Image (cartoon, rainbow, N blue to C red):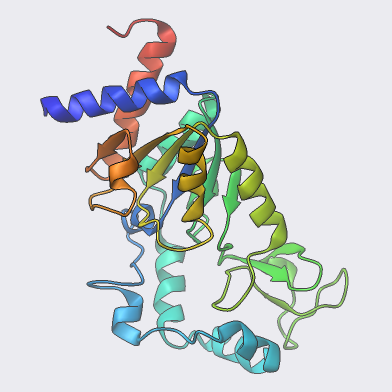
Amino acid sequence: MAELGEEIEKAARLLHEAKYVLALVGAGMSVESGIPPFRGPGGLWTKYGEPDMRGYDRFLADPKGWWESIIKREGYASELVEGIERAKPNQGHYALAELEEMGVLKYIITQNVDNLHYAAGSKNVAEIHGNILKLRCISCGHRYERDEINAEVLPPLCPDCGGYIKTDGVMFGEPIPPDVLKCCEDETEKCDCMLLIGTSAQVYPAAAFPSTVRRRGGALIEINPYDTALTNSCEVVLRDPSGESLPLIVERIKALLAGTAT
């Protein structure tokens, strides 16, 4: 416990002293909210098989057929959507929202598609893999809430430009939406301290952001029960779940801000 306290203190001081803090969030944080992972024991792809690596090409070839399968919720998509619809933010999500409100955390780059950061109250969120609860036009990039689009006629078309609409979640073979990618890159260039939360740091382009921060002399703080490719590059490594570690960090930062930390 003493060692954990020391690492919490180090993390809190790094965040308190940094000028521009980002959080890079991966699937581990969603798992804490009960959303099944994709890979590994209990993973959706472990159970149902890996998804089609040409998924986006198949959407473009047959948008109507793709929508019909989505509406039927076939395969792993059914369990994923149902899990996301049931999920609630955990204490880690709320702690990130509180850090943003305190002015410590400037932006979240999340690889998750579950909307839980917004549900917890965070405002500055870049969803690099999209949001499965929203829709997006692939032509103009406009995003819609699900109830804004009439899906009685398939495929639904964008009211703004007439382009095809799909779910906002980024499919295999689909480019990262350019507005989101630019936001992530711009924010990373300003970052001098990055929280790495529940991410294996293996999926690009998100996996490149910590290296950019490190190359510019910034600090990395890892919160993950497991070792990752970035563990040895981190100033602080916390092996407890984010729902336990982040609230403790918030309390220590509050003490630092109040000038009562010893």
